[in-house]
Image: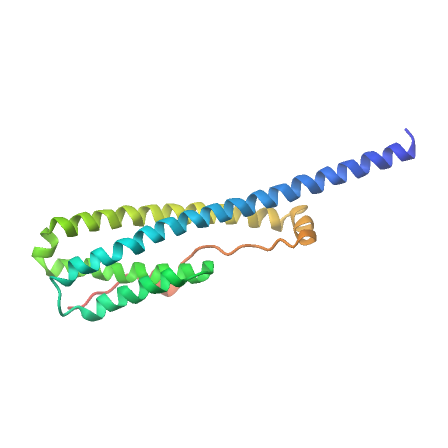
Length: 183
């Protein structure tokens, strides 16, 4: 074989190598965006449900004003969040506030028996399960992408094209604690 042919083959192999690695990273980025969009859809569903839940509880719990205000503030914070870390923090605040709100229903037998409240609670439970799945899907995509980016050749190609590792959607350690409700 001539040196020119060997050089051409080497260049083609390197180009194919960079091309496939770049495409792998680009695919990972798209999957992460899709997964984050799935989280956003479920968070939006929950945010839309919260006013109905608050109105239902308001009729039964006039003196629980602070808790209802906390739920409203957490909802507003989630609606205004733009960064993944802000969304995760706001989501955790809203989850905590909603757990407290649901726990309050134990003190109001009429509320617990309300068909409207039970339907809202069931829908909220369904949304929470979907949010958990969407977070897991997002984090799996982030893990796969970050792993590709951390290993050779992904690290080299990623640095050449400006790819950066992504953040996981996770709760802070203080936000993982159980909600304590006092009456």
